[in-house]
Image 1 (cartoon, rainbow, N blue to C red):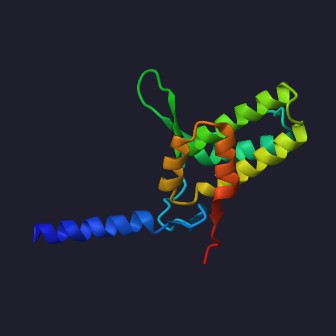
Image 2: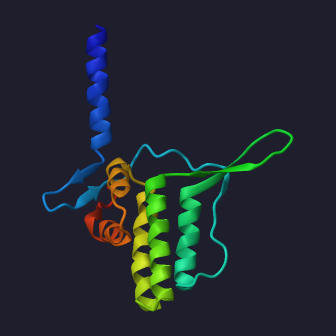
Image 3: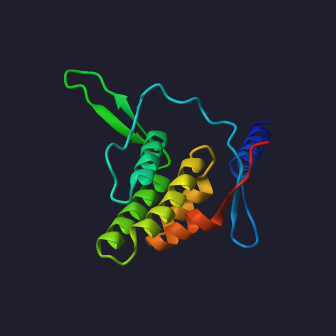
Length: 165
């Protein structure tokens, strides 16, 4: 009887974890909305404040990105502090790596500010959308990528979002 329950548990877990994303033959990863997403936390959310060297549109999207991916937990005690919690850390770290990459390229005048802002805006748009999806495959792929240019190609070209039904 225990083995039957174990097999049923294993099958349901496998179906649940792989049912949300489908890789196609040409390497594109199709993502479907995650219906099991928990309600938004009442904790203070992260934010990006100030101007950004790549422009106002990047600053606005970074603010949205930070508010979606980070929040702060209050601790109790004599020296109460807030602990920053980052959701989907591999995606968050990949976007931050791309941001540093573009800032260095613009400072060295290897790329124009407009081109960097346009491409980074697309990366931010896709990262903001990813928060609503089950991204186990995406996170494992991003952990393997170290080069910012590969991360940009992955986030901008390899991921396709399916509309909500």
